[in-house]
Image (cartoon, rainbow, N blue to C red):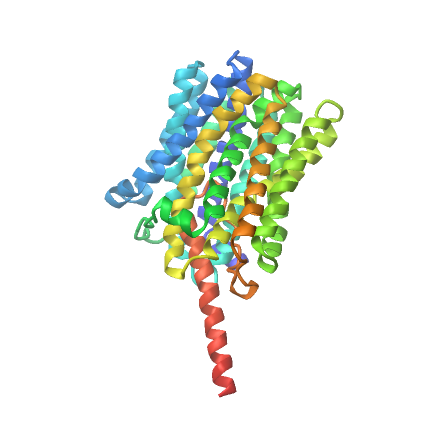
Length: 427
């Protein structure tokens, strides 16, 4: 593992700086929007533009990378994202913020594509899984620590926007100094949505619903916490707890899903997430500590769900279909993420802050119910034919999905080779 990290330390450092800035900025905007008098509905709509920009960036950036090159694209997009962070502070009104959230989402999609394609190029059959694990750690760890940076200065001032801008700019340094030639870039192809749904209805529906839930958590979590009456320090811990839970539970949930019918694990995880969401509603007015604990457990259940959806879908695909299918699931999740914030904001406007966890509970209960229904409609994949779950962050691009799919294919190839050697030995 140390050798893997050492060979790609510059990329991992750049990714960590990006996520520090992104995690800080998302929660900061939620707090500042509330302080500036934005309605909950307006805030949800503004925050959703990040995901619309993300979808646009994931579609258009590969063409730009092919024409211009990795380093130039990364430099241009990081500079643009850094500028957008400052414009938020200079022009505090919904239309400008919506436009800047779109620009930020577009830029981050491109930044991820460049970083992930470099990782994909450097990965070998032996290191691909380790690279993905470290990448997942940088994503979740960066977002988690980014929440704590809310305590550095007053969210109503200018300094935190400057800090978010500086962090994104600093991501340029290690990536720009990366040794070696830039990798060749081939954007993964995509399989049609209806075709993929016929192959794995639960995988597609789960990716859409999970995208909604994760979009809500990232975009509206700080708004909920602020309207509940938490202090800035408590809000930073609240948001950090959710992502810390994802880091803690990602591996054990993946192991369970590899050893049992994956649909049963998906059902258990989503229903537990729904229970923890309801529990958050019940404890939010009584104990801040209990709310933090329940939020950690909720994050631990919901954040691994995206990887479960991809792994479940892969169980029904041929190896050659996995990369294209994973790329389609990424876009499905992105579409869900763009719909989540305004939908849940409307719920919060109707019933108050509790609408945040009420909506999240309903989303996860719906996934769990659909998983139970699918179990009655289709026989389980035999355990010895299930592909291993590989961690993929919910904000991943098709490139990371391709990296995940290649890891699964490597595992399948090694299993086939072992079976072949075993049969030869018997002969």
